[in-house]
Amino acid sequence: MPVNDPVGDMLTRLRNASRARHDKVVIPHSKLKLEVIKVLKDEGYIGEYVVHTQDGSPQSEISVQLKYGPDRAPAITGIRRVSKPGLRRYVGVNDIPQVLGGMGISILSTSRGILVDSEARKQKAGGELLCTVY
Image (cartoon, rainbow, N blue to C red; front, side, top):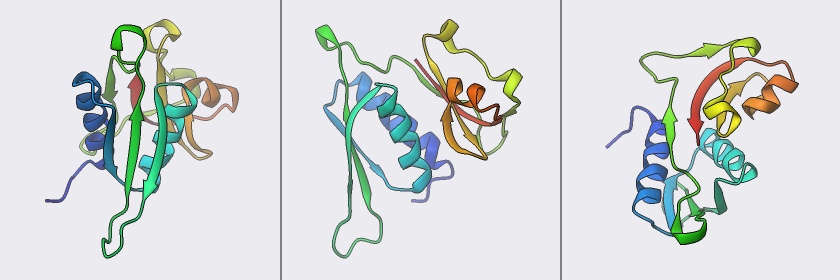
């Protein structure tokens, strides 16, 4: 069954697996999803990830190792899609929101690639506000 919002589907898979305390989650591969996964890894919200290509399968997959703190507390306590296919949300560099007073991150799709909010401010680049993570 086709998915209308692939990034939203990926975020939901991550949220559900984290809440269910799974060790890993498998996500269908796309370039945009892979870039968002790289940002989440760089910011410390997930562990390692591996891209799998299967023989005979047209779609490759990304296996993501979830990260937990002491007492199995998930590193991702909240992840929310902001810009949706039905209502895109674009922000200028001065309007990039701070998540939980700087304790979380916003992920943006800019002309310079997929960036976290602090990097977008440094590069003075606005763009589509994909999601917020805390």
